[in-house]
Image (cartoon, rainbow, N blue to C red; front, side, top):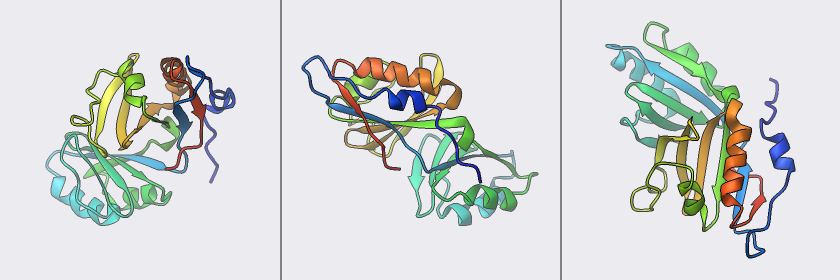
Length: 198
């Protein structure tokens, strides 16, 4: 299988920047080594879909707007009867496409259409607060919560993956522009470019 090339290669090579106080209080990076599949359930076929998908993803499908992890995948309910399945297992997409009858639902690989950008550090909410129109306060956005929102008229899925870490799933086409907006918003705090773990 061909390895995906990064849509952010030039941005990653630019390096970090010192903040107003000369420090670098944030880290920004690209997360690699994941596969993303979108699943769609056709009306009236929910039970058949669940019977086919659940054994492969290793857990029940989450309610709309929720996300949950199993041993094999992380599943996001992005809309009614629409799911994203994130996994490090490259074979999962093929297995889902084989198991889910085309009359029951759809299986679409999004791996080559998305980039995943992670930001971490104490000022991360201040940075994202400049760009996203969602409440990022810890009591409103707990670790493990994922929300769809927009960033400069571009749809993104934002997930809080740690106490001071957020991952953004962005369209590959807009990844470089979104990176630049994030870097600009982070400039006052300073940032390093780091390889981010999955």
